[in-house]
Length: 311
Length: 284
Image 1 (cartoon, rainbow over the protein chains, first blue to last red):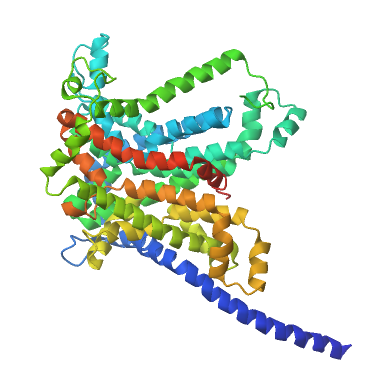
Image 2 (cartoon, chains in turn cyan, brown; image 1 turned 90 degrees about the vertical axis):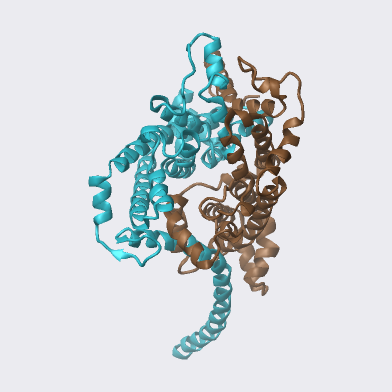
């Protein structure tokens, strides 16, 4: 008995050595596959976050070595920089409207589109998705909202007697943010929208039949109790896309309302960051803004994930 | 047209949905209609008052003016086009190889670091490039990559969203048994990757190509390109449209040229994208 056990043990040992050797070679190959991506990823995505956090505690003008100044940058941001507080308020205002609204529009449109035949569905998908992939095309809105009477919107409104004289859509602080939000919503049907469309198409139809037996009575109950839980992973993915992009808005503000905008009415955290980073070369201060932006984006994302998990 | 399984919905609700869809569709399409019409408008129609949406006597003048307007600038219009094409082509080719290799390794092999690495990638979807812009500027400066195609191309090789999508798709589409039996037959990781995995996940890398083309073609050079001769087409458009209403015709022509690339690429491969996005969900 004893010998048999030790005998078979030896056999196992022999093969496992061969096995280990083989997996060793393999894991060397696996690491080689990962190396190019992750070295670039670490240099240009992970490391910069850590560097931004470190520089945020320094005075750094890029010509001299950074000097450690502790929390001074953060103190100045919150206690002495009125423009930053305004940027913070603008960013939240913009994000609270465009984030959830863009998300809901994406979800509802994907749901409605899902009822159509594949041909019509794909045409509608292109129409709704196109704005988010057309790059700088949104600049066309500057022509449409141009402040003179040759502007398309002004011309239209004057023609029908809704306004008497041209409105300065993009320079008047009263209208600026609303126009930007409109354009941002126009562009908000991106990767999340596609994810919802795919999610709706992938739902097992048996679920609906089972639901009907269990007493689901109308389409809205069906949507809430069957459809939404079935696409929860896509809901989470779409939320990440919405949250991140709504807090990142800056180019759209700069290109529509100018930089800086009148009364800083369209100034955001990111435009503030660009101002201090790339115009004033106050890298330490700008990195403190970047760190705050990073924490905000990650915390809001995590929080929204938590909310959606309850659906 | 409607699927059979549907619970009843009143005709009124259907009509309302349809109306809403048409209104939203019109709103989405308006800038496209506007820009397409503007691009073909002769000068007198562009400045007509009150402004008209549709073109009456279409002309190709604006497209030929693209080259003359830009010939006054430091570099020719074709150089902008070349810059955009070059960056998009090289960046996308490198991205497909590098990102799908990593996605395959993460999706199909057991590895101690696998969870950690993937979680960092997911975390990176939760913040945008502006967070890293300043340190990256310093890195590019130290590497001597300011005013070089490399500054745009190399970071694009490792696009987290694409790694995420490809890894998720490979995990659900490639059976473990196939990779296992291939490795018992002595196939190395690279062999399994090129011969088995890549042909099976064509929708995933087509989608990655689309996202990469959108990303690179739409890049304006940002904070890394200052010298005019390396600027892309999107930057040229910004400059032309900064001329305001006076340049509306030429600007629209350039906008048409620019949007054709991402939109047509998407139309051609839409079904692949939707297939890939079905695996896009975030589990936990």
